[in-house]
Length: 295
View 1: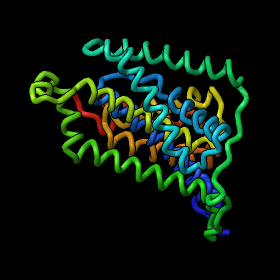
View 2: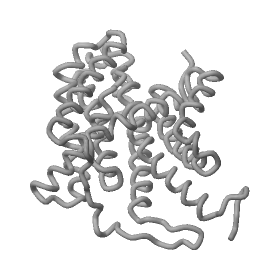
View 3: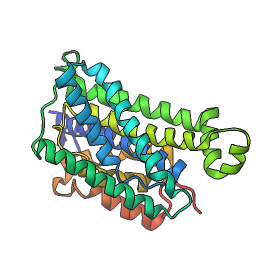
C-alpha cells in the first residue's frame, strides 16, 4: 500500500477530506462573522445560535411541511435571516457608534436565550436529519472513498464563499456597503437608506450561518448545542484570517480545516487544540491576522 511520510495514502486522503469538509463550515461561518464585523463593527456572538437555528428550522419545516432538502437549503436560511433582521433593527441598531464590546455582550445574551429555548423545547439530544437521496452513497477514487454528500458540501461552500467575496469586493453594492461604514453621513447625503443597508448586511451574515447549519444537519445531528460547539473555533479562524477580512476568513477556514484533519493523522491528541495553537503563533508574529490590515 502506498504511503506518504509513513502514513497509508487512503488514511491520509480520508483525513484531509474530513479536514476540507470541516473547513467548509469554518469558512462559511467565519465569512458571515467577518462580514458583520467588517461592515457593522459588531462581534456577533449569536452566530453559533443562528447556525443552530438554521438546522432546526430546516428540520421542523421538513417534519411539518415535508419540504425537500433543496428547498430547505434556501427557505430555512431566509427565515433565520428575517429573524436576524428583527434583532438588528430592534436591538443592535441602538449600539451604533459604541464600543464593539457592547455588541458582543448583547449578541451573547441573544445566543443564550435562543439556545435555552431550543433546549427547553427539544432537550439536549440530537435530532436525525436525512441527506437527500441524490447525494447518498460514495465513489471509489482508487486512493480513497469519496462520500457524495461531503463532496457536495465542499464544492457548494467554496462557490458560496467566492460569490460572496466577489459581491463585497468587486461590485457597486459592496463598495456602497464599505462606504456606509467608513462615512455614513456622506452616503446618506446621496439618498441611500443606510440603516436598511446595515440591517440587510446583518441578515446576510445570518443567512450564511443558517445555510451552513442546514448543510451540517445531515452529518452532525441537529441539537441546541451544535452552535456553541463550533463558534469558538470559528472565532479563532476569523482572528487568524484578520478581523473583518473577507478573503482571510475564506482562506483561513479551509486551511485550518486541513490542518485539523492532518493533525488527526500525525498527532490525534492535538487535533482539538491545533487551531488555537496556530492562532497564538499568528497573533504573536502578526497581531492583525494573516490578511488583516495593521492599524
